[in-house]
Image 1 (cartoon, rainbow, N blue to C red):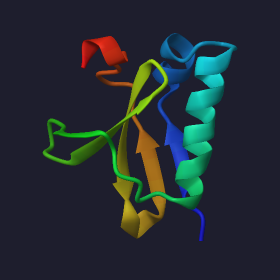
Image 2 (image 1 turned 30 degrees about the vertical axis):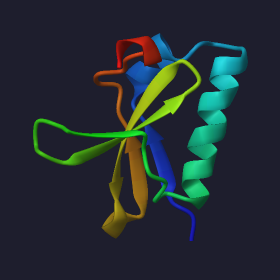
Image 3 (image 1 turned 90 degrees about the vertical axis):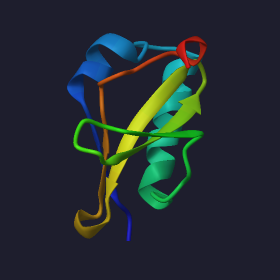
Length: 87
């Protein structure tokens, strides 16, 4: 069963480029999460509620996500959206 992927609106409006290679790489990664939600991130952090955030480097961006297995969905957050050079 495929997971649903929810993307925080701030990410789409202010962070993800409107066109080009970086946008394509990010959306390809998001689509891959539907089929393979348990992909390991390149880093792991804990948010303010101590949930584990998987951080995957995609192109020039760090994509932060949390998986809700019981609900069969992933949430990609807009908080702390550094570029690779910030990590």
